[in-house]
Structures are given as structure tokens and as C-alpha cells.
Length: 481
Image (cartoon, rainbow, N blue to C red):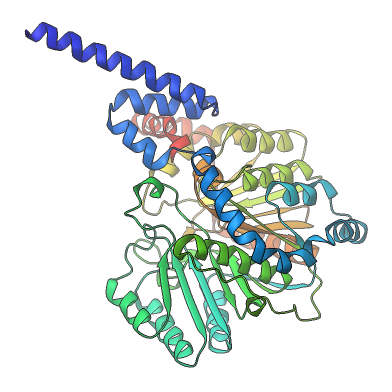
């Protein structure tokens, strides 16, 4: 067989592969941008593109059977615990609408797209930065009497994590059930010795999805949850590590936001942890012992919503669109970077063009992977052109993920404003229907303005052509970032 024959076979096979890959991706009925991006990956990297897709590209259909079986296994035990909340949802929503004038459509959206119950007996505090979050968490851990449950994307074995380890070991030896879930990729700096010491003392430690499960390696669990005795919970943008205290390598400080919740919403966060724990180790913890009655005194309405590659709806993306669309006066948003899909971008531009004060605060510096920041740069001129004020935070690394609307409703969570967070990662956001909390977030936003420089689209267009082309190349793969 001659070289010409081999070449013909090779190019024929390559052509068949390209056509087959294109037909397969088109039949998936994804967004056109994502479809074109994946076709580009398939064709530009034959064979390797298929591996990348298996690891990072599959959506809800690939998980539908697994999710259905998981739901059926847990439903029997979870139903008696969840039914009291579910039985009064219509009444609770009607009461909050009447008392606070909140847009009922937003609460119904969160209820339906994430199957999220509205809880009302809650006390909530906003904790800005590790200086406020970590001491409160340690105090609650030391006072734990029944259980301590942690779930974080990043958990290290540095100085601060060593201090937490000693507290967890001490509580475990006192009979408290201590469990830690971590993402194996995000927590790849956690040492084996650290894990061994915890396990030797009776602390249960498990990865959310072991790296050897190649079919799930691309679907990171990005949630941040702590639940103490089933009654006190924390969630937001902060992970567990010394970098939140001293800024880590490359920054003098990290700017982030967490919430502390005491009440019924803590039980919802407990249920999220229990489902993820079961998914990781197949241990069913649904029992009344982990769901104590909420203490009296709280009055903050809270909804907890989750999303992931196995979700029917892109719940957190829909939350952001719904909140922006409901605004009458102002919207303030914080996110490390900004890689929107068309719905988010259009919602923000529509609000700004309608005369609403829309402000978006991003980190002016990148941490680790710079591709999201490069791709994000290309979306900012259009936003600024529509009247959105884009602020670049210069006071360290901005890692907060918050949104507040009209000083009435706000959300704090784990999801960045990017396609990966909205479609690929397992994420969690808490929505607070409370003017006090929304007002606090907006005041903190105003305080952060002193450390910001405003994005100038004209200055960006004057940048070196090579740098702007670099950003445009990064944008090509933005649906995959």
C-alpha cells in the first residue's frame, strides 16, 4: 500500500470523524455557541477532543439515570423530614409577599427550578472575609455536641487547616460525629498525612468524587457548606485555607463573603450535605437526629437552591436573570470574573438601558488560571456601552459571589458568573428576602468601591493588539471554561 493510499485513508477517516462528531454535537441540542466550541475541539484535536468531552462535556442526560436512582433511594427516608416545610409553602410565600412586598415570581421560580422550600424561621449574619468567618466557625465547632459537617471545594493542610484539624479531632474524641467532604481537584494540596490523622481520630473524610472516576472528573463540586448540630450553618464563597487570612501567594488579602444561618434553612443545607455525602460514600444519614427543631426568634425568609450537571434547569443562572429582571432601581453584583451566557449579559444590558443602576464588581487580578479573566475581558465593552458600571477591584483578590437588588433581596453563594458555574459545577446559593441583609451587602459594596478602578472600554480598545487577540482566543473556549 503506497503513501498516497495511506494519506487518502487518513484524510477520509478524519473527515468521517469530523462529520460524526458534528452530527453528534448538533443532535445534543445545546446552545449554538457551546455546540460550535465543542465541534472546534473535536476537529482541532482528533481523539483528544473525544476524551476531553467525556471528562468535561456531558450534561444532564449523562447523569439522569444515576440521579433518578439516587432520588428514589433517599426519598423514603427524607420525605418525613422535608414534608413539614413543603406542606406550608403556599402560605409562607403569600405571607412574605404580603409582609415585604417581594416579587412572588422570584420565589416561585426558585421553588420550581431547584425544588427549594421557602424557610422563614431564620437568623442570618453576613460575614465579610475570613477575619469574621473563621472565628465564628471555630467557636461553633468547639461548642458542637452532636455533629459537625463540612463540605468545601478547597481544603488545604496549611497552618489554618492544621488548627481546624485539632479542633475536629478533639470534638470527635468527645463523641461528636465529624464528617468532611472535599473536592479532590480543588483540594489537591491536602496532604495524605493530614487525612490519615483525621481518620485515625474518628473523623470521616471523603472526596465528593474520586479522581479515578474519570467519567465525573470534569464535574467539580464547588459548594461551600458547614453545618453544626443541624442548627447552625455557613455557606457562601469562602473555602478553607490560610490564603483567606493572609492573601496567599500573589495577594496581600482576599475579599470574600459568607453567611451564618441559624434556623430552618440550616436543615436545608444539612439535607444538601447528606445527599452529597450519600453520593460519595453511600451512607444514608437522613434521620431526625440530624434535623433538630429550629430555635425560636428568627424571621428571615431564606431559600437554598442548588444546581449541577444533573439538574433539569440551570437554577442559579435563572436566579440571576430573575433577580436582574425584577429590579426597579439598582443591581449590585460581585464575582471574581465574568463569562456570561447570552441570557445573563442581555438581562444586565436591558436593565441598564432601562435606566436601572447596574454595577458589576470583578477582581482586577487573576488567581491561578488566567483564561477566565482573559475571556471575560471581551464581554465588558458591550456591558459598559449599555450603561453597566464595571468596577475592577484592586484591594487584593475579590472572590465574593453576591447579588443584591433594590436593597430588598440578595443572594450569597458559591457560583461565579461563568458558564462552568451555571452548567457544569455543583453549586449552591442562598437567597435572602430581607432588606436589612440586602442593605448590608449594598453598603459593603459601596465600601469596596474605594478599592476599585472603573473599566474603560476606550482604554481596552487601545491595548496591544496581541493582548486583545489573546482575549478573543480565550473567548472561543469560554463555554468550556
